[in-house]
Length: 230
Length: 227
Image (cartoon, rainbow over all chains, first blue to last red; front, side, top):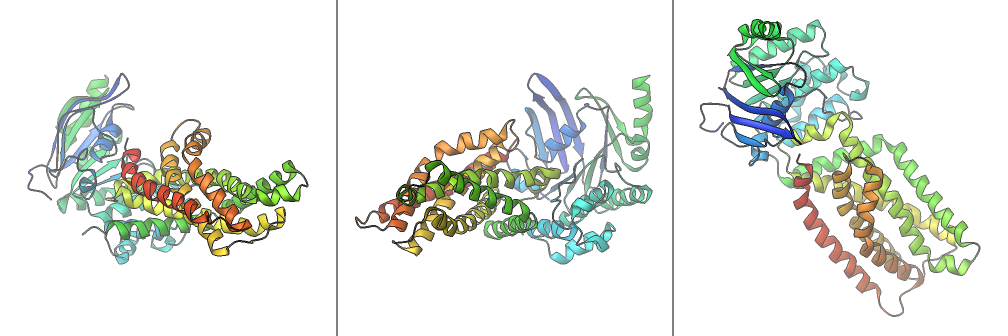
């Protein structure tokens, strides 16, 4: 990581699509080892914000620094430090789970043994050679987490990490969040499950119509949301 | 330390070849499409053996060109399924490696298709190779490489567009007229013989086209993948 106090720092980050602002004036500070809960209704701008942080979208205005790098300018360099688990699995469905992970390992410079370990950790070691097309949505989500474990990024972005998972998967994600923060990774989670996330994460940011409407401790966010909607 | 561009290119190439093999039913369908196209040309021209033999190279290249649209379009459809391309884009992959890996895989598939179509063309059109077999294969290799480089770029550009099935040939066909012209002329010379020594010139045209587009397209590919 570069010499930077914040793993993620954004100032007045905005993104427009045509004449609509999906994100407007968002400021963020996330330190290494800290976690941030992004909440808000559908269309509030959570996914747009995560995609900008991941370097998949360019902001229309504002400044962004991810481990000291601007993903809009140093896209490839920034991607060594950031990973995103999105709604879709981002897998090749006709490849096996192991093949997908070994592909990622070869591209990031990790050893094939690391891929096998990551697959084991997410509980898919016995399905390594099965095509991902035959996997359930929850298994695909677990495979996406395996890629994060393989990449070991400084900044982890998770979009609805509990979505499609069973109770054991919920516990796996809870444990993973704890271990990632403990190892110094900055974690940003966008979810509607604010009660669960509020007990696990440090800070909270509520978005409404792309604008930040509340900032505070993640544990206070559920109450703030109820107050905002009452 | 990140892998080199060459290493990443080989990884992407292997992945694309593996995906092609897993989806080989699509390759068989593409071959069948090309064969049907070749047959349609012979039906359209009629039982004029001399015309069929004289234009065998042209029919071969038109069949290859039409089939290439299916192949090139398909290569990015696989990338969009489950947002797999986005997954690659999230990794620190050099866009040039992504281009070279995919374009080489497309070129290899088209080369195999082209070589498979040669004996079928010879049988269907009653042609024989009076020129040179190595030159014939060489023109198919140069021509398919010439289709693959801009084809891969345009396939990426149109993969998320509305009406992508129309957009790809609409953008690609005007651009690859020099490839079609040079490859057809060269193939015909390789088939019918080259008494005037023209084959070198057409090979040079194809070589130059490849040089330009295999240099230009990788540089543009990163912009195409951007939002």
